[in-house]
Amino acid sequence: MAAPSSLGVSGAAPFPGQPGIPASISRDSSTDLLNVQALRRSFPSGPATITPIDGVDFSVRSGEMVAIIGPSGAGKSTFLHLLAALDTPTSGAIYFERNSLESLSEHELSEYRGQKIGFVWQRHHLLPDFTAVENVAMPLFILGIRREAALRRSQDLLHEVGLGDRGHHRAGELSGGEQQRVAIARALVGDPKLLLADEPTGDLDEHNAELIFELIASLHSTHRLTSILATHNLSIAGKADRLLKLEHGKLSAIARTSEAKAPAAQAKAPEDRG
Ligand SMILES: Nc1ncnc2c1ncn2[C@@H]1O[C@H](COP(=O)(O)OP(=O)(O)OP(=O)(O)O)[C@@H](O)[C@H]1O
Ligand SMILES: [Mg+2]
Image (cartoon, rainbow, N blue to C red):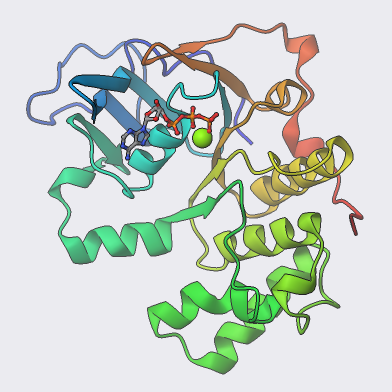
């Protein structure tokens, strides 16, 4: 995991030479995986307009784990959906590995969603009548990977999330914590670079929330991921490399003492069956 960094919030690093981007660079942006410039997203709300994302500059270095907190309705989900190209900005730009998402074709965007991004939702959105291993393999089936190879990889991932013996259970028969583990395995099955998790522990009790976070932190490390987590859980958020707050449309860094931070990469693999 990358060293904690206070960079990349306000005055985020633009990429040199990109048209329309200021040339004044105050830091080395060469290790950024993701860079967001003046991002805005508005929605009509009756006769008015609401703008939960209102001029956000943000960047994430490869290997970082960033947590985003903010009150309900602040725009955390909206922001993650924009990063995942599940939604389109009203204005501003998102660069992934220096490529503007806006410049990608529909085909390239679906490759981006399917192969670069792993998304974990608050509610797992598993197909209850399919087995755990089939649920994990679903993104690979959609990509046209051979069934046998897809199931083999999915079974390996289930093993990694502590459910190696539950692959043939129907998803609907698993507990809430187990279902979220299956959803995490599904998010990683395409070997993404960027893991986006939208309140991944929001539906779980405190103990299972902690275990799921430890699992994500452990996978973040072993899969060499870059991760962005939205969460209401401050004890979980406090373990990320960097803690940001989204409020009134803006992202700001929350300063912490280094002693307060327990490195996420040190989290142990869990034993959850809850
Ligand atoms: N598709 C949409 N159409 C209209 N308004 C929307 C849409 N999506 C989000 N919003 C509004 O944008 C604001 C931000 O919503 P969002 O779901 O991003 O908040 P959040 O921070 O994720 O909240 P929570 O913590 O409750 O999940 C809310 O006021 C919401 O009603
Ligand atoms: Mg949300």
